[in-house]
Image (cartoon, rainbow, N blue to C red; front, side, top):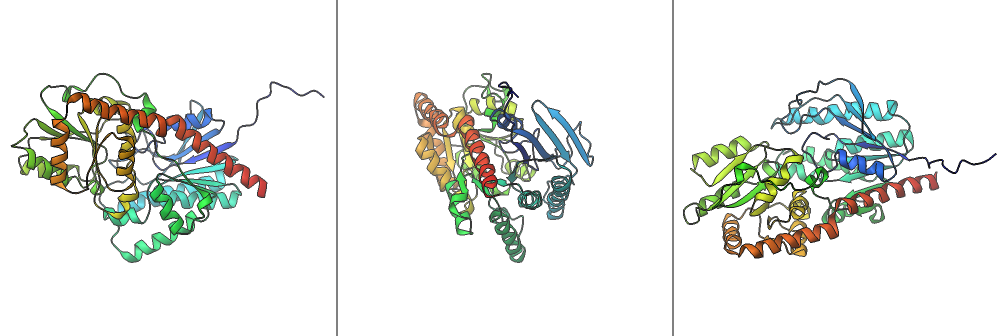
Length: 422
């Protein structure tokens, strides 16, 4: 018998479970990430819900069914039924999480094809629970990508106020973390907190996020018409407009600068639970130097970022956010524009390491107004150098290629260890 030297090695099968996926404007683990995992040697199936984030309404062109499976490129995409919701109703949000949990648990445990590893994206924690249970019954390793620290996030955003419920969710989280073969944390602060909560340090790997819009081809050269008019100094905030972002501080800073610096304009691009309230508040205060723009897709956001003079990151002043690197940070660095970081801790440390802008305390409108004035007074060439340093740091430390290779290494190590131990 002769061996066929042309035979290709068998690809390990990977189930990637994420409640939100393209075309939803979620974190940077979408279709390009899944295709990249295929390129790095995996046969990939994505298990997700029907797109409804952030509006809570099912996207046009989609109809909820128990299951919908499609081959898209090299990736099998499986969508499962869920209850669409993303408003301020705790009941609606809970039903959204629990319905996907139920659908995914049944599918992963009983109906998904044979697989070698599960990669789960958290939040919500129920995705991690689903993966842990399915991994146990199918006797396969599970890796979880932790992008939010629950229950800390729920408390910080005000979504859950009951300390009894917070404690219960905390126990569920600790149960889940301890049953993961590997955990990927988005920051060093997350790693420290996971260790404090009982996770063995050798099972945690820090992999920083890469920029969202880099997945769809990077920054296009043409600025949007809304930001093309000359004579303005534009500070752009792009992303979710929720309670965690604390954007009342931006309105307060705009009020401080309205008369003395009429050329400075705050542009808010995106939507979320706080959108309408913020618009009404800006109108009531007569803030003509604050402009709101509706959410755009990841494919379209690059020109908006590139057209701004300064890109703003802002979160509430909360201990949780001091160990968080907001995902927009990487997209901003990759764009090559100066950054104003109103986040303490890990996010500010990353900006200082990149030397790509100014870091100020969160929820401090006077500091925000002063920092904007300082950046506006700089020579444009110096602002360009700031942005260039950020872009260079991104390419050196945070690129899509480097991050995805690290993911593949962690997943392959989990598979190898499980096979070794039986």
